[in-house]
Image (cartoon, one colour):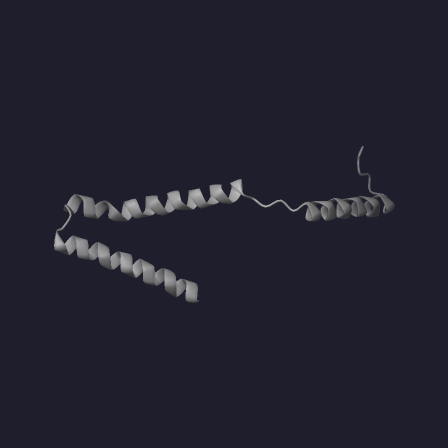
Length: 89
């Protein structure tokens, strides 16, 4: 719930700044009307960047990989003991 309130607070602050820019005429009206579009595009680029960084530095867990291979072998043995054909492996 705290996270939602934080996000809503940030969105409210951004909306207030946008309305303030519209009312104050500091920036040209044509640019101010495009600010929400720029914001959405910026957030999309930020999201893609974070996903890319997460994929580049994806952690590898060799112990977990060995445990998974062990569980796969156990499952194959169990299924073959039940008469299930596991193929050429």
